[in-house]
Image (cartoon, rainbow, N blue to C red):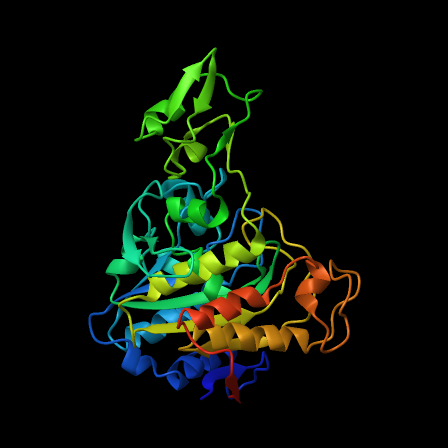
Amino acid sequence: MESIVYFTDMRAGHKENLFAKIGRLMQSCGIGDIIKAGDLTAVKLHFGERGNHTFIRPVFIRRIVEEIKQQAGKPFLTDSSTLYPGERKEAVSALTCAIENGFAYAVVGAPLIMCDGIKGQNAVDVPVNGEILKSVSIGAEIVEADALVTVSHFKCHELTGFGGALKNLGMGCSSRGGKMQQHSTVAPKVAEKFCNGCGICLKSCAHDAIAIFEGKAKIDPDACVGCGRCITACAQKAINVQWNESASLVMKKMAEYASGAVKGKEGKTLFINFITQVSPACDCYGHADAPIVNDIGICASIDPVALDQACADLVNGAPGNQNTALASGHQPGGDKFRGVHPEIDWEVQLEHGEKMGLGRRSYELVKL
């Protein structure tokens, strides 16, 4: 049996603008059955890094918020702290960045709440019984929400080939420790040339895994539990993730985390992907390169696997843009994701997502 993926292109006119088409997409997916009166509804999106401009426009998010409110739901916008030091490493900086990027209440009509607390540690251990992981660390506010709507910018990604609904669920809904678990199997590493021995990392470590030796911080890999607190606590940016996990295993872990993000929300989830400004890399960068294809449209489904598969097929079916990061696959039908990141087998996340019961890769595309 095929899953239904609804699609609208970017055409608009005086009879129906793009905002109305977003509402029709959500209605076609059965938003009235997903959101009930009083449902605290997490709208999971990417707030965008400072300097980036390809994240989804706040005015589109407002239309999604309005549709949830029409069902008498109570929406809030949410994202999680990053694993690496940067503008979104903890809640205060992340929410400031979000507001600067246009996601203020006055624009979107919903409050902003970080799903993993002020330092990325507010999480719930959710059992998943995956091929690799038996439990995953999901942001507490995602777990506590009554319903979940993910709104994802579909684009290329340097580690997973593309980023869509599955990545927004698996990586985006996890705690900092969860991100660490997906990316690395070893303890963080101290770059001694940057370490000044201030001891802040010692205070941040709840497991006594750090000590100062000869004026430099040292991490005991046997005592480290991989929570990642020390990474963002270090003002010198001297503590770094050891990105040692293979791309395929990251994608498998990500799919298992995605299953944890939706656990307990059967019939209470909706996934929306914007195939616009399809950039060659993640929105986590403080810049965005030229899109590799022209804007295609917006897709929505209650099946995140089918949704991402459909979006990947639509991108690959489009002609590629010249003079961009796309090195091959410019012809319609060419693999655009390998054309940017040739070493990444992006289908792994779809295969494992299907294996984890998140959905089906087979779909019917219904054009509105």
